[in-house]
Structures are given as structure tokens and as C-alpha cells.
Amino acid sequence: MNMYKLLVLISLTLLFNCNSNAQKTKTDKEEVVYKVTKTDEEWKASLTDMEYYVLRKAGTERPFSSPLNKNYKDGVFVCKGCDTPLFKSESKFNSGTGWPSFDKEIKGNVAYSTDYNLGYARTEEHCATCGGHLGHVFNDGPQPTGKRHCINGVSLKFIPKT
Image (cartoon, rainbow, N blue to C red; front, side, top):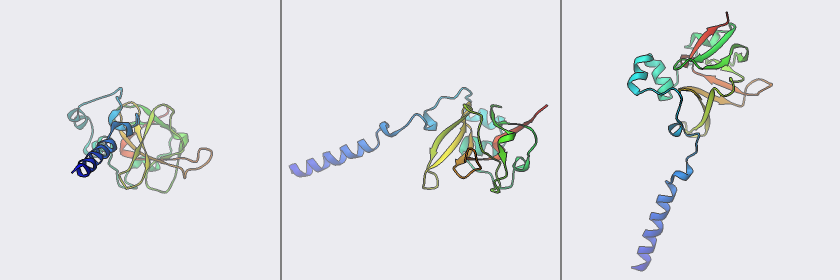
């Protein structure tokens, strides 16, 4: 009987230790407090259904569906949820993937976390001001950065240079 109690105690200890908060990091989306916060109802009222799906539910738009994919005009791309400047037009390039792609972000305006939704780790990008999901960053972009910020066009708004 003592051996059975010992096994149960060890099993419970392992179970609770594996679920501890010590494994969570400060970059986990649900632990970050953003400057712009709204209730779910407020986000739904201020965004279209697709914008809400991408920005607030980490969805993905269909490739080649965004008019911003082929927009190479001079200006800045801002967050559709809060107007934070995210990418400058000079960092945009044609990746051929069907989503707007940039080789660098505006420093401090994009936050990062790890996404395991497809069964492997990817670096997810969020607006650092409102937490809106933007897309993912990959290490297969052009030099000098070698980065490809693959961004859902529906999460962006383009402001032309005047």
C-alpha cells in the first residue's frame, strides 16, 4: 500500500509541476497589457468581420486577396485597429506569397510571441499598441535583414506620403 501512495504522490507532483506558470513568458499574448484596450464588443463594432477575425482571433486572410499586397506607393502601413505605424513603404517587397511582405518593421511598434498553431514554432507578430495579430516573421527575406514579415493586408491601413 505504501508503494501505491508513493506512486500517486509522484504522479500528482509531476502533473502539477508540468502545468506551472513558470513555463509562461512575458511575451505570451494573454499576459501583456496594451496601451489600447477594448472589450470584445467594442472591437467587433469598430472592425469588419474579417478585420476582427484576423486582428483579434489571429486568423489569416486568403493569399492574394488584399489590395495592399501590390501597393508599392510611398507612405506608411499602420495598424487597422489603432493606427500605430508598423511598416514603411521602402521596406516592402514582393515575396510572391500573396501577402504584403516587409524586410523590417518600425522598431518598438511590433511585438512578438511564439505560435504553435500548426504544430511547430513560428514567430507571430502583433501590434505593440493594441495587440492585434498581424502575421508572422520568417528568416527567408532579402538582405540586409534576411527577414520576411508576412502580414495580413486586412490588418493594415495604408497612409500615403503627402
